[in-house]
Image (cartoon, rainbow, N blue to C red; front, side):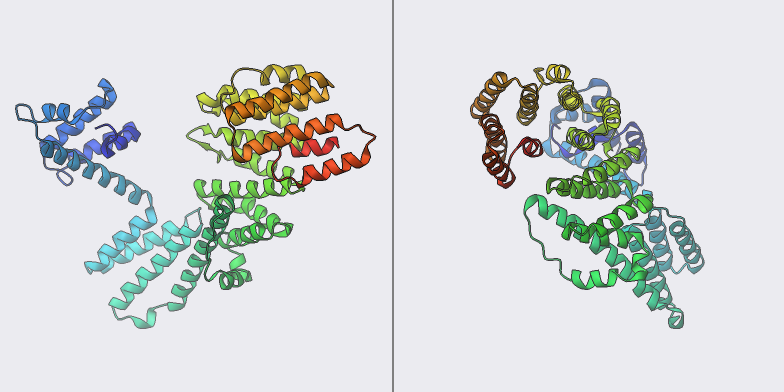
Amino acid sequence: MKNSKLWDILEQMSRRDLNEIRDCIRSPHFNKREYVVKLFDFLLECREELQIIPDKEMLHTKIFPGLEFSGSRIRSAISLVSKVVEQYMTLKIINARKADSSLALAMAYRQKNLQKHYNQTIRTTEEILENEIQRNADFYENLYDLEYEKYQSLSAQRQLNAINLQSLSDKLDIGYLSQKLRQTCFSISHMRVYSMEYDFGLLPAILEKAGQAEYQAIPAIALYYHGYFALTNPNDEHHFQQFKKQLFDFGYQFPKNELRDLYLLATNYCTKRVNEGSPHFANESLDLYKEALRQELLLTDGVLSHITFSNITAIALLTEDYSFTENFLEKYKKSLQPKYRKPIYSFNRGRFEYQRGNFDKALDLLQQRLYKDLLLNLSAKAVMAKIFYEMDAIDLLTSHLDAMSQFIRRKKVIGYHQENFQNFISFLKKIVEIPDFEKENRIALKKDIEKVKAVAERRWLLELV
């Protein structure tokens, strides 16, 4: 059973899910074989009480006592349990989508010519959608599906004069525009990370249509419309500000997972602008992170990614919002995964103490033997180098940089990261070596730092020359 699909599923199920699956297994609608019930119960016993992963021989002995082992027999039994479990998973998703479920019921009534019940169910579906708070692209797709179902019914009854084809067309437009713009924005983000290229087809015509006032009044369209132009014309701040306003004003209309992706899209945009020399976008980014934290968008099952934790700390320190930074570090350290908690907290608290000028505290935190992750280790060493420089401990700094360089060679740091930290070491050594009065050499060095593609702590190095 190890690495089997059924066992993988059962391990992820909650106690409530398992109880509901047990009810399904016992229902004649899903299963009429007693040995399937026995197999499911034994699998739960293995998971909950015995805490073992049974093999097929053990299962066969338990479910078919007295019979010679047959691989095909036990595989068939496992397959039957899997079928019921998958039916449960499918039905649970369908039932959670109230509009979809109601519309499917209406379709069933139409196919059975039960017009009275069909009409009642259509009205129920309309009420569900009218009361829906979330109005993203999926909502408008549901509106179109509802309109199309009504069209199907009227066509079958030959009530052609009552068919509202304009409404059907309008809802199709809104659904498609919102879906296309959403997909385009996330595709562009993907392109930037993975150097991919996509053909966006009808996008020029869609952008022209989406820019019209009637569509700009629909957040599911307007938000992604401004998001697209912010991503493709980053120097035009108007679209970013409109995107951010839509996000703050109408974010409640989007499901949590989509809203999380929107906030990450916005913060990634801000980070790019900061790295390109627009430091005021750090404040914009921190505003976004604060709101995302307030809505608990960045936590998955109560866990905050160690990368996000470090990114938020870095942005907060850049804005010099020390009160928020300290509160964030202490509040959210317990939300880090246990294996990351000590090193990630210690590193980021060390950065905080360094920036506040508490060098001794910072060094105590950064010198701890917690940094088994190679990049985290190098990042901690880079901050320590900054501390030694600012303490004017030049001999200590020189020794530290030499040791750091040896560490990189010994650990075989490759590619971008090797270049990133080796350039940091090289430039910092040059800053130490070139006297302040050699203005031309320092200006040339500044240009080199600006020009090089990869260098850690670039902003700090530029402040020194």
